[in-house]
Length: 196
Length: 253
Image (tube, rainbow over all chains, first blue to last red; front, side, top):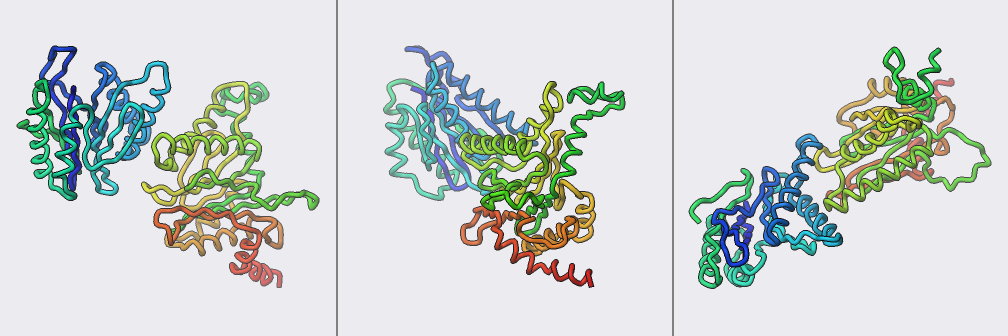
């Protein structure tokens, strides 16, 4: 019951991931970071089968970095990154043991000066969205986001909307998810927002 | 004496040379000239078609110009049969990149991949190297219009104007003299014709002896790359407009 949430705002994308690492009925850890930085302006957040998740995210991270090393520090755009991840999941789905991983990719394209949020599931479904979530969190958060999301929100407004979603999740989710890590991807790169 | 080192591609001679690779490059300098010119509005590729038998029944399609993908074309000098293997490979590479990343392959990445194959045959023994040089014309949103050459050794380089094949040094000298940074596409086409008319030994230039292609951006559809392999009619009218035939006549007088 991991929570991952993404909200795209005017000049950046916000990602929130729950801190709890659970196994069965136990919480193993309350400071688990379910994100990996792929490059300076691309962040992947993941949920799914534990073990598969970190393995997959770090595999993608390594490949994105390998691309930059090979191609003279040229970095893949968020769109190309998302397509690559989708392609990997779609290939994996048709293998003997597919990765059971769902991801959100927050990116900022410096060429077009646009932020993006890509939603990809283990079946290889990929969509570019203004906001999105995976798992149980999606059931509670989507209705709130549908109601309150507006185009061209500022980062502060986006963070306000995120607070609203988290409050609902804390009320409705049956287990304690130990709070969230919040990260913002914008033109300056990836940064953590404290106080959640 | 040197036979000992000639027979294998992968063995250095005592002077530190790879003879088979050099011979392959030599074979190319006998093939028809191809020149490429970069302009502000696009890239021109022009090739000399070595005149074959009158009886040859071809449909008039280009023999030395190939479309690689939506934003790249190339011209070939050397063995056409070898070239078609590499062109096929380049096309597959371009499509597989498009499938993975949902974006057109950047020109240099594709060229590098083709050159890696060429390089392989200078090192892993038993076979001969590919006897082809390429001129690549391409567009990508990182570096806009680009012109590259590659040779049998697997080296590649970027140019504003260059030539490969027979008489390439003469063509290069003429390009150095007449190339300007602010050429329009039309001026670049005319410059290409002018230079080919001087480096080719035949007296009257016509569409039977030339192949022509341009790469430019669409004016209606923003960001769309247009590539055109010219028809015989268009080539003939370009030759006429460029006035090289008139110059020739003056020379004769």
